[in-house]
Image (cartoon, rainbow, N blue to C red; front, side, top):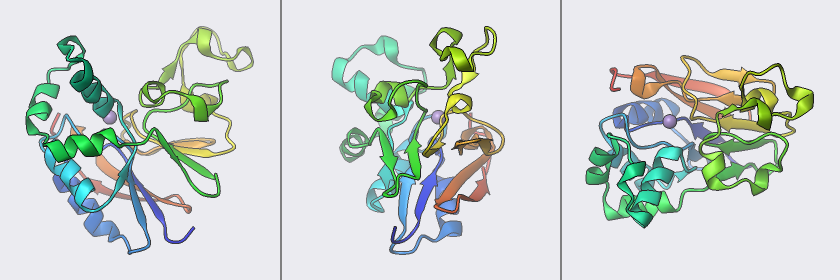
Length: 218
Ligand SMILES: [Mn+2]
């Protein structure tokens, strides 16, 4: 791999924090930046976050927030919208929608050592064939969907606890106060919009770089 792959967790409209993080990272010209989805909503500047991504040629994985708004634009069913979606619908420009529509379901490194996704993968099914609406939303797996050998009583289990590799999955979507590590997965959604941190994971070394949120937005 020439250069590093810099994966960045859920930005959620926190444009200042994205700028702070990029200043701290100062990506080289051979490095690639990959946003792990949920660029929009919760924070104040959804449009500006997408604009930064567009103008810098960053790639993005589709998050459940982008997926819901794209679905709304196709079917015009307002019952699927959340209250904060309306502000974002007003903010986004045509170029932003074009960028959102081209977001990818997942990103696999050339050596297959890492896979980046927004939400996660269902256990017991080949991950490559899982639909975008599944992989951008997966979080807790209910007992009936857990393979019997991994079932522990009647409780839901976070998908990452069931993930056995071989690829290490770098994901967002499940906000935590700190980076959350499982044997073959790490979550870099560290609750920026809630006043936590915006986190980058630099691959292949899995180096973590963070900036503190400037304030609590949501
Ligand atoms: Mn999110």
